[in-house]
Amino acid sequence: MKDFKEKLSGRIFFVLALSSISVLALITVFILIKGTPLIAEVGLKDFIFGMTWAPGRGEFGIFPMIAGSVSVTFGAAVIGVPIGICCSIFLAEFAPAWLSKIFRPVIQLLAGIPSVVYGFWGMIFVVPLIRDYLGGPGLSILAGSIILAIMILPTVISISEVSILALPRQYKEGALALGMTHWQAIYSVVLPSAKSGIVASVVLGIGRAVGETMAVIMVLGNAVALPESILDPVRTLTTNIGIEMGYAEGAHEQALFATGIVLFVVIMIINGLAQYITRDKNKGRR
Amino acid sequence: MTDTKIKIENLSFFYGKKQAINDFSLDIPKNRIMSVFGPAKSGITTLLRSLNRLYELIPDTRAEGRILIDNEDIHAPSVSLTQLRRRVGMVFDVPTPLPMSIFDNMAYGPRLSGIKRRSELEGIVEQSLKMAALWEDVCDRLDTPAASLSGGQQQRLCMARVLALKPEVILLDRPCSGLDPISTAKIEESLQELKKQFTIVIAPHNIQQGGRISDRAVFMLSGNLIEEGTAEEIFANPTDKRTADYITGRFG
Ligand SMILES: Nc1ncnc2c1ncn2[C@@H]1O[C@H](COP(=O)(O)OP(=O)(O)OP(=O)(O)O)[C@@H](O)[C@H]1O
Ligand SMILES: [Mg+2]
Image (cartoon, rainbow over all chains, first blue to last red; front, side):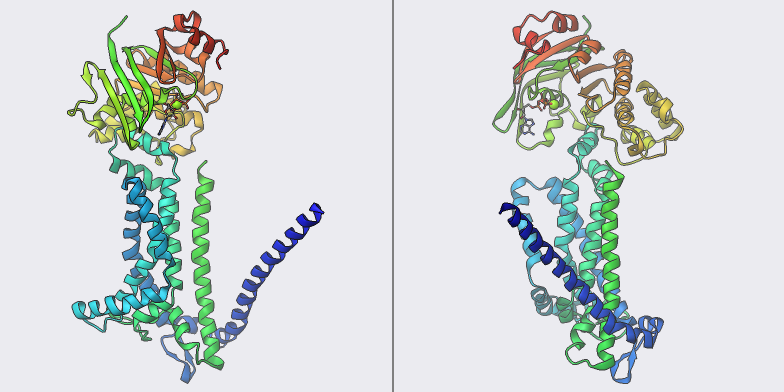
């Protein structure tokens, strides 16, 4: 009887696991089937490097969107990564226990806020601020970068902090016993030793920024054009799909799926990179 | 008996409310090897760490009593913590090489104290590595990462790194716990050389090691000093029954 139960529950879990994997596989296949014909027709080079996105005229070049995604993500990293790493150092090395006890759940909470809320906040707070003080329409790369920077903070902070805290206590003690100050120990021992974890946190944060859709739709302005300054509006790969999928048909729809393939590949590369970096760490050191 | 290097007077140590060392007094002679041993959790690590104030890393800890090194109170406000830790070097039970090359590991301390000239650094590095019996092993690969050394070599590197600071006292907390017998023998051998220049306080790996290497020894139990004397007295003819029981393995 017990044996039977064991076997049954094993089967059930197997089926559940299998079904979630197959759903993933199905989605992937579906996107590929829908998108590849258009890429084949337009040509990969023209699709990726084409400057004009005019579905009505059958022109499908996504380069402006790629530029949009890259610039907004880069901006988010420039703003968010230093802040995130500093926060994680503070939490792991300086904050008294009671403070980190408050801080950690708050950061987790930050990760749980729906992105539309971030977008909304950006729309009514960040965008006007930029418009009034820096000029331009306000809906801009800068606004998107700020919002995304805040959104990637939880990822960067928590993963970096964990990787700092996971270091053997002796690393830091060895440094202090050599007569280093706390700061010297941090930048010459703690940070280099936690490097792979910190880099992984940045890569995962970037992955999150690339994939984010809702929040950026609301603050980017979504113009399909190569930006000239950080105050210009742009459209990203994700927002392109989010905005047009509702009414797209035929080749247009296919083109959006093809955009999805590009995104898919980019995210795969980023996540693969993160995996590679963290695995490297476990192999390199005992 | 030589001069006293370290004088511990009525030291009590607390982790929060928990007392780890009780009213502990001990004179540690210069240029000798002093072993501190006892059953697990006796407060040995705590004692060693209070000599270079490394426990100050742990929040809510407190030391009472005085510790004098060359008649200077190490808790005096005028004492610089980083200076103290360079005078009182420490080797841990786990090797702690810095994540950099062998040379940079060795040169880190001297650089901190302001030595910049490459030739001078090289001299210190070579001399210290020789004292720790590691020079032969690494002289042709000083630029490789320290993490590529074996455990025993890493531990000797940590010892050499401490020597490069030109300390006065060396604290070793079970320095051979993870090492093979050959590395252990090398470290024990170099300790005999090192004591000519330094004062050494060691938590031995086991009683046999304590007997082999030390000049004097202290037996500790639950934060109390039970018995102190020359190595022969303590390891061969202890007067206290608790020491005798522990040494003969009848402890418990
Ligand atoms: N960071 C700490 N916080 C609270 N209590 C501690 C801390 N470190 C040590 N203690 C306590 O102080 C006492 C002495 O510990 P210590 O590590 O000095 O002993 P030890 O003789 O070195 O032991 P071991 O055989 O484990 O090396 C123990 O009861 C231990 O639980
Ligand atoms: Mg100990």
